[in-house]
Image (cartoon, rainbow, N blue to C red; front, side, top):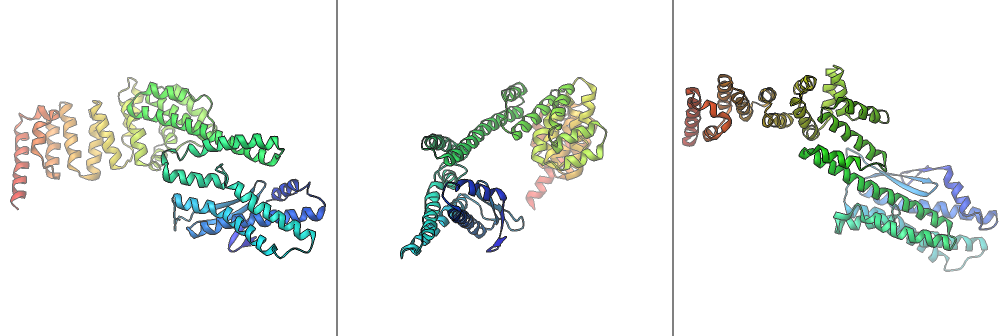
Length: 442
């Protein structure tokens, strides 16, 4: 159905739960009144969320299901909504606010008295559901509205704890509520709070394990592979599939970086059997199968930041392997299409690892792509360190023509020390000085 432009989906279990909650109310008339009160109240509550969400640019729709109601806020990519803690706060408060408003209107309308027992029952239940439940719903417990309100306030005032503090508060209040619900035989409250407690406990576990995976990635960045593996080994029981997949991905990459093909294949088989693999890992498999076009397509779907973080250290490790098959893998990877910033990072990493031949190839590609003088200069450094002075001078001249403008850098760079006695080197330095002098006069 549609109401005020909002699509509303009503699931069968909504009616079933309404009947279960109202079975002890009385006769069939009272049960019908109760179901009507619950439907009107939950729908009005969700309409409060939906109206405010639409005001901020979302495309909301409402679902009434077994646990009550949900307002889904979809995003239109062509017209992104407003976001921020204040938006989250307003949308979260709007639901209970709408319930309190409806309860207030019912109270005012009933002040003149009611003529029948059915009307009295309707009014009392409307007040209880819309006032009592709305106030209860404002408790700072996730995923209730009060939990989202509290999360928005934490995000504003203590953002460092925006992920953990709402769940810790939920654990404390939900635990007390479960105990109280069981003691006073409020089974529905005890059940709802038990669900909240379980969700927050799981969320905190995911947060802790996510931080451990993040620490493992930090060790990956510093090259401490033993420490990275130690962090992953501590994750013996990932609480969610997402954590398990992230752990598996990094285990595969660690095995690849250690040039351990058997361990990488075993980890990949476990990972791929349960989920569609990341495009980067699929590119590794495609290259190993000789499917170059597919590998290029898959690599193109990865961001430059990811390639710098993952591909650059992998290729550098393979280039230094004792097994020729890993060196051959590195040679294939450096020839794949990559963005200039990835080539620059890869070329530098290979150079400082003394893999001058591969670094030269990367810088040659980078110069062809950008015509940047630093790329030609770095190619010259590679050739000079590889004891190829004639070729190094050719690339140094290309760097000068491309706009290299600091002759003192050439004179002070130890990588070019084998060239300094060559007349060609001196002419290049003097030509740069003359170009700088002419530019200064102009």
